[in-house]
Image (cartoon, rainbow, N blue to C red):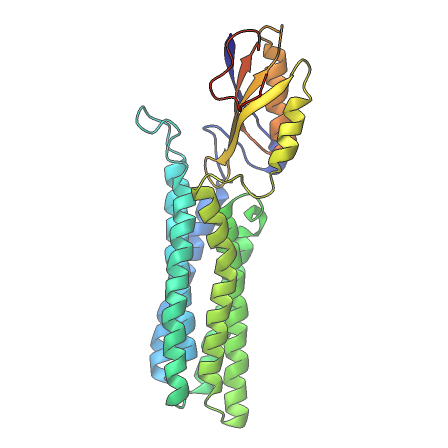
Length: 315
């Protein structure tokens, strides 16, 4: 005989909740809105002055910032979709949209980086003079805007892949803008025109490096890998060590969204009937120790027919 038990753990200490509740602090809505508005305005400024100053570095940074604006919009939309209630068709709701948004954001940024790199390489063959003073001023504004935007997401970067991506990209943008200032100053002092496309290639490298982790993590979550930071072996050892449990099988751990983790498992407990108190304890322990907030446990007596999902040799 088997019994299914569902557990929804909650952890106020970590600043987020699970299973149909808020997935991120409400203030992030304001952070997204302010961040998008600031960066759209800055992209327009960079694009205009990049053309006027004939600076590929400034245009490259504008393209990167535009990608980040699109990424912020995707992440913001995904957070909104993730709050929708489950339906008969989407029984988990639309929580996975946060994972898809992160993946789409990473892919778009890498494609954009490739295009910018190609343009920078072409400039080495035919370097053009740029108005260094204009580039320095505009890029300095970018340092302030990108740093301010990043700080709005700083406190949520450990709990949400979307928020972490926004934070890392904004910080990378601030560093890139600082690099543009340095390159423009170098051109002003030395007259070396190759510094402009050179810093553009540095920008491309920064984009690729900062995006790679986001791409890897997003792809892993999209493929239902165990989320980073969760030790599947430790979870299995915990479940196996529970009172009366002789075996654990069909254990699965995956991300429902970028903020929620789910688990299903079959526990074999010979000669033990349903135990709601134990199930509640398991849900709390999984939440507090492993940050798994949505657990579904099937308890089997092990005294009858072997579960068809059990591995060969399982009791």
